[in-house]
Structures are given as structure tokens and as C-alpha cells.
Length: 237
Ligand code: 6PG
Image 1 (cartoon, rainbow, N blue to C red):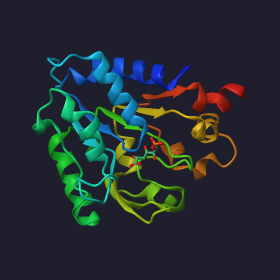
Image 2 (cartoon, protein in one colour; image 1 turned 180 degrees about the horizontal axis):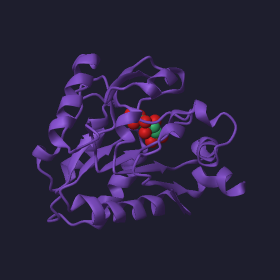
Image 3 (cartoon, rainbow, N blue to C red; image 1 turned 135 degrees about the horizontal axis):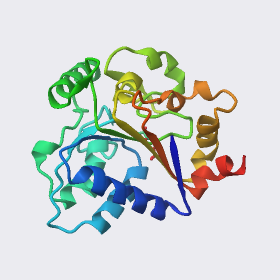
Image 4 (cartoon, rainbow, N blue to C red; image 1 turned 180 degrees about the vertical axis):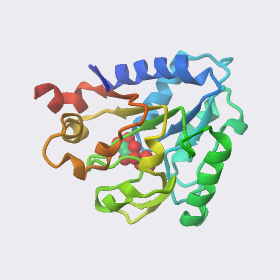
């Protein structure tokens, strides 16, 4: 496991952007991205480092999607499209959003089938080249929340999660699916995450109650991109 810590979120985003451009965006690779606010700073840094002519060759999938219309402000696809896809040279044929407007259970099944057709399988499970994950302050990742720990052992490739605060349903890759990726990166910035980051990396206290602690890729290829704020507790221990 590689833990990369940078003095600011800007530097963290810049270095992760550099890596993604070099290893993924210019290649025919399958990447699953997360939603929330952290990826927005990363999108900005990628845009800063590529020119308009740069052709993005990778295919984009989602780690999870809120069960809303893509035009909703809550939509992870909508956010990525606004801040990234609408500004770069990438074909729509390379973008495979989770259809948040469909019935959650139906879309979970449909997305599983899509992954099977678009990605290679390892041990008969679809295998993405990279999953880019965030972590919530409660230790959730993707849309696997602490109040739904039973979902950790779900054998499906895609599951339906429920945000405990809003009750909003989400379609999410399962932990099993994420752990079958060739590479997994946690991209975490901000002091609000400093305690869960330390609990997970240091395997402290009740860390197994945090879904993000169960991200253990079979490939063993797991990295963290952190800023000082999110790594503060970890650096102090
Ligand atoms: C989502 C994400 C979720 C996110 C974390 C961190 O749909 O919200 O996939 O898992 O990565 O909640 O969110 P922030 O980047 O906004 O802190």
C-alpha cells in the first residue's frame, strides 16, 4: 500500500492528475470514478495539465450514482459532466454512466451486465483497471455505508445503498467488485476525514466498522493520495 501525502489539496490533486494522465487517460483503460466534491479539484488539475487537443482514450464508469435524474445537482454523472467531460476531448462512446433515473434494483442489475460486456473478467468477475474512491467522514466509500455492513459480503457486482442522512438510494459497485480492480486509489482531502483516514490505515479501534477498511484489492495495488489536512492524525501517530 502506497500512502502519498501532499502539503495541500491542490498539490495532491495535481500529482494525482499527473499520474492519471500518464497511466490512464491516454490509454484504452477502464476507470471508475466516484462522486462528491473531492473529484472536482482533481478534474480542474487535469484540465490544467492537458491541452484541448489531448484525446482522452480511457473509458469511464462510475463507482456509484445517486438515484436521481442526470440533470439533478445531486447527480455524480452531472457533476463530472459539468466539471470535466464537457470540457475535454472524449467521445460519448467512452462514457458509461449509471442511470440514476431508473429503478435502483433494475439499474444495479443492468450495470452489472454492462460491466461484464465492457471489461475483462478476473475469476469471472468484471475487473476495472482503476477504481478512484473517496471516503466519507463516517468511513463510507462508494455507497456502502456503516449502517449497511451486511452489504460488505454481498456477492453481487452492483448493489443498492441508502444514504443514512438523506435516505437517498444509490446504485454502487460492491466491495467485491471494487476489490477485483487492478488498481484502487483513495483520493481524500480535508481535515473532516483525518480521523477515519488514520483509523483505516493504522487499523485502529473499530476500523472494521468502516466500509472503507474493507477495500483490499486482490491485486494488492492500493494507493492513498492525501493532503496534510486529511493525513494530520495519521502523521501524528
Ligand atoms: C458519492 C461518493 C462518495 C464520496 C464520499 C466523499 O456519491 O458521494 O461516491 O462515496 O466519495 O462521500 O465525498 P466528498 O468528496 O464530497 O467528501
